[in-house]
Image (cartoon, helix red, strand yellow):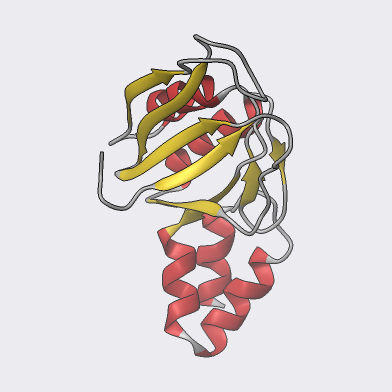
Length: 157
């Protein structure tokens, strides 16, 4: 286990979520699965309690803690993409697997965890500042999934 790990609370599907992330994103894997040694408020002995996994190189723990705690947009994974094909692949995997679209490149997976699928061209445009940043920002504000060609066109003016 890594010294510093992100712990994500799930109702009861931490292992399913971890396996989905591992199948979807490179540099991702499922590690140890720990089962409850006894009864607990959200489950019974033998249920999956904790799952160690990595998402795009980030070590995580999925905790099956029951329905009391929900994910919010206060935490999200931001995945930098190289082009429209990669953007579409991740967006469609998350939204197409029971997730939902949001605004400006954000979406939620079926477990309620937020994701930012962000093409590098958008980050570069915003970092550049000035008029091109404003044009790229204005274009982004009209989008759900980011349209790389539209951001590039806005950046050029």
